[in-house]
Image (tube, rainbow over all chains, first blue to last red; front, side):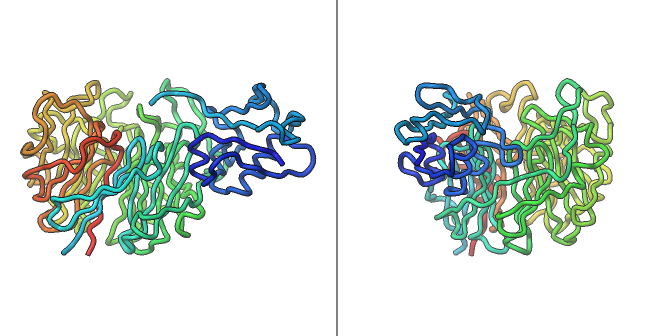
Length: 98
Length: 371
């Protein structure tokens, strides 16, 4: 079970109160986690990564275990603590005013 | 008594403003989708409770929303906008070629006959259509792949298809406008398109009378005379009496012919409205006085409409999709400002009053006339 923390607007959009938990087959990767997240909450399709290219939206980043995982390949294994459910996988929106 | 429902898109959510036919006491609902940019909300002419909304964000991309109960509840629908084939390139600000890339939906135009059919004008400029209530979207690629496409370029707000007009007398005919490419017409339901920009003159582009490259801000028509088009261009208010084949200027005695919206009175096809803005460098009304101008002669002779509007220290803008008219009698006219005011006139523009004063910057205003 992977724990995913989303930005406020995406939680509201998907009707998620707090963390969301997803299950993936095999060793968790960002791609698998996002696939599972979008399958469970189809309204999130296109909001974290482009639907056509699967490219991350430029104002979003991925953190876990106090590491910046934004530029890891989508099929790179996530940290053990994330895979074990001990630490959440954080989808973070860039801070900006306006 | 008839009612009206004003659909307002803002930088930070959507608002729905309702009133009876007197249009003097308003109920405000919202924000819907708080925190998101709502570029446009529009209702189906055949099912007024069917609304479509474009919800967008620089962070999270495009979301499409649909309501089947007049905006009380909403459901996200399909948001996959994929260009047909290899998108190719258009002109970038510096004249180089730049890949076509979807950014957002600027404008939604529900079908005149089918509530499940709706057109979407998007940035980078293209026209999409859904025939299943927004669940899926298909491009009408004949527009984007027009041979002039590589010459299209973005305006400061992006290369947006911001206006879609459906001809109520000819289901095969549509008009669209793109900043900064110009106006286009199809006579075969969207398969092929013709640039309709003859007569436009735009200083600041290499050839002022080029076939494409004009920054058309808005076009409008009256349903009873869809061959007569009115245009607010970057500069110049224009008119066509031949379905866009040719245009002539009707700016006449306007204090400035720069502006964004233009609309037509619901019952008087020769009565049109614009909001003059100082210039492309100064996006606010001349002299700090917010005035709508009305022509009852289809252009050239204009009268200022200021009663009830701020006449000093007013430096807001009125964006291209932020004006609408209702179908009641007398005709109601509505517009929203970048300062968050939505003004209404229940007497065709003679007098104005704010419905709301403190919304986020208004991007779009539509109005539904309800039984």
